[in-house]
Length: 216
Image 1: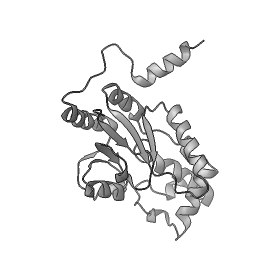
Image 2: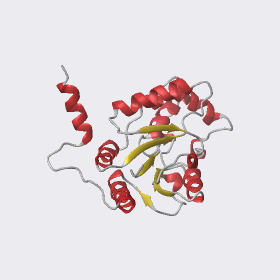
Image 3: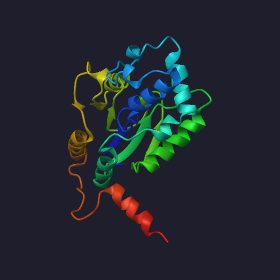
C-alpha cells in the first residue's frame, strides 16, 4: 500500500467532546454549565469530580444521553478530511471509545451514525486502547498520553491543541485549516506528490449531499 495513512482521533479532534459532556454533566448534577469550565485538565479536576464520578457520568453520557451520536463536529473537520481524501490520503479513524463496560454496541453504532451524519469520510475505523498497535504514517490526537505513547513508539504525531495538552511540545495545530497543510506536506514527502482537488468540484461533503438528492 503506497497511500499515506493518516490516523485520526475523534473526541477533542473531530468532535466537541468537552462541550457536550459539560452540558450532560450539568444536567445530571443540577448545576450551571458555567460552573464547569471548558479550560479543564485531562482529569477534569476543575469540575470537582470525586474518585468515581468521571466513570459514572461518562457511562450515563454515552448510554443514556447518546453523546457519541449527538456531539457537534469541530469546525472544518469534514471539509478538510474530504480534501485530504481527494488528495489520496487514507483516512483511518483511530479511537478508544470502548471503555464503557457492556456499552460497546451503543458506542460502535453511535460512532458509525455520527460519522455518516456529519459526512466525515474514512476508509476504516479502529477501536483500540493502544494506538501504537494501529499502522499509520502519521496521527492527530489530543490525548497527552496518546501523543506521548505514539511518539515514544517512533510515530509522527500532530497534537490538536486543547487546554489539557499544552505542556506537550510540537508539532501542534489549533484548527483543521492548519492541520490540512501539515498533512498534505507529510503526504507529499511520503509519496513524492499529492493530487489536489480539481477546480470546479464541490467540497466532498457537498458532493455527498448532492448525490443523495439526485437519487430517485
